[in-house]
Each structure stands twice: as C-alpha cells, then as structure tokens.
Length: 215
Image (cartoon, rainbow, N blue to C red; front, side, top):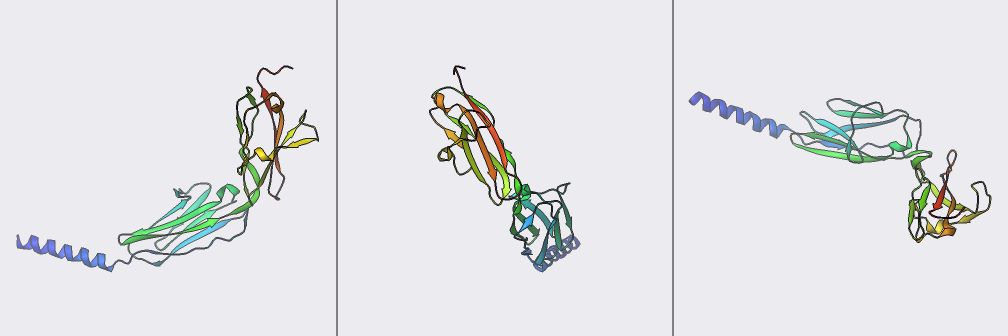
C-alpha cells in the first residue's frame, strides 16, 4: 500500500513538473506579399516564437480548416508549418490563419492573401420569363481582384443593337439587377459587363420575356 502511494505521488509530481515546464505557444507573425498575380506560387511559413512540447499546427482559410490536397500542400515539422499554393487563382484570395497549440495553450495569426487576376464567372445571368406586375432579380458577379465594375444596359430591340439604355440605377453594389412592377416595355435584351482592367471583360446578354406578350 505504501509502495502504491509513493508511486502515485511520484507520478503526480512528474506531471506537475512537466506541466510547469511547458511554455504556451506564441506564433511568429508571417507576411504575405501584398501583390500576388494568378499563376504564381505562394508559401506561408508559420513558426514559433515560444512554445515547446508536442505542438500541433492547423491551417484555416476564412475560418474553414484546410486539408492538404492538390490545391495546396501542407508540410509540418515540430516547430513550424508551411502552406504552399501552386498556380494560385483569384478564388484562393481570403484570410489565412495558422493555429498552434500545446498542452499549455494556443495562439494564432491571420494574414490576407489577395490574388490579382481577370474576372471569372461567379454568378452568370440567365434568361427570365415574368408576368406583368412581378419583380425580377438577376445576379451577375465574378471572382476578380481588383474588385471589378458591373455595368448593366438594355438593348432597345436586338442583342446586336448599338443603342443601349442606361439602367444602372436599378443595379445594387453587388451587380444584381432588380426590376419591380414589370411592364410590357421592360421586356427585351439586357447585357451585363464585368471588368477590372485585367484581361478581357466578361459579358453576357440575356432576354427578359413578358408572359402573354403578343408577337
């Protein structure tokens, strides 16, 4: 019984000493270049300023855990972790966080990755058919950096018409076109153009048909 008590006391003291010897994790801030272009390779190195023992690292993008796969590679050692992105895309833009933790605590650091590139479709507008008096909401948006402009115009008769009507007052800050209390004269062809000065603009023309409209 005495032997068991001594063994338990010894183990308890070992655990206390081990815990006291642990230093809480402190992440060394990492920096991402402010200007990154599509196609480049990006590396983020997350290291320790302080911390010992069994340190675990975790990477997150926009607060969602990242798993090493074809889009990105994670290489982790005892005192640092590296996140690598090959052939980076505009869609890789976001907030990247490295979390380090051990038995004494955890710490994290977040940096912003902004990838510069031409617009690619996020929400493509499509043809609509609506009845008189109804409302219509048509989304038109893209992945791009710098942030692109979204301009809507209405073609008077055919998609190829050069004469267009400015309808930007019906477009919100996200590029969504909203028309309320639809009337027969609202039917026709509408064109959305997205551009940010890099590459070629995106353009899509759709038709809004009014139900019951005579030919």
